[in-house]
Image 1 (cartoon, rainbow, N blue to C red):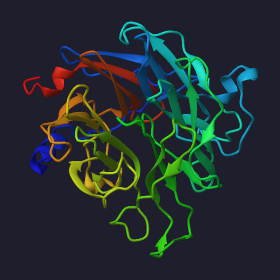
Image 2: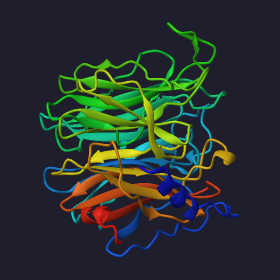
Image 3: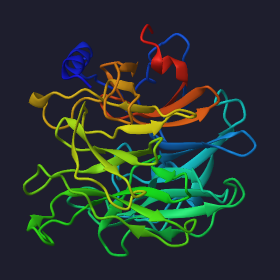
Length: 411
């Protein structure tokens, strides 16, 4: 991707200021794009002010199954639904509020949805259950990966977190007991939403990352473990047993760094490519030629990015890759970057280069972030969360995008 293109793209949608919002601000306004159907599929409420970090899959009967992280105010729940109190929880507009995984189905391509139901609510988690990722294994069953968190991502509530998986043989109506696929210790291991994969040969991979505990030396090189690293858990026996890759750390960070929330795709030749979230103003890229067991040394991708996860996926019946991400990054504004632009682009060469970006959302007064995608015929259903600038309200949005639109340079 040419730097000049991205500098112009970022400048066109520069952040122009926040808003003074009430406790529950007004609903978001989604950008109107001809030919694209948009809607809020889960609207924020006083009791559930934040929804997102979602995943979706097509069921055998043709329905779509959408799961998401539903953040809730405990004191507004019916008494029978409240989790045990925990001093590690924070306000539900942030990452460390109480949350469970809910789901609903659609029989008309996402235009209408069933009544939501709770899918996972492990109440032994001292913080929450979030970030679902669903995949259909080669034996036909569904595998659901999610983050079970008994600690938060702050210095005062760091704790035991894990990536768990459950399996369903009845299209998501019931689920097996959970299996922990990250190390069985008291450290922090989670993973991003919509990052459960089944390769063509049946191997299942789940993206994970860890906040390494402060003050502990990384074996071999004296690396101080006040940092985050990404890796994959993988299974070759339909989720019965699991192995893990080495934790990948930021090669440019001397005594810290953030490698997290990576996204992976299998290319037409069978190799894998991943794009890794970090704080350098662009994603890093790494490749695997052995089904994800080992990965090349990470390198800058050249794709400008906020400190936010990019999503990469191979388009159906095609060798082309689709990326959805937040390209806005201002080095003078700190490491985060404003996530007000949700962009997409196509690669025709397996992720080496990318075409001109197109924008799904551009409102400078709200953030559109954490995309996920599934496909329904000739359409991509893109789900993403929309925060107002005060971060007091977060709705789950959906864009039904004709795949041809990603290629159309005129729209």
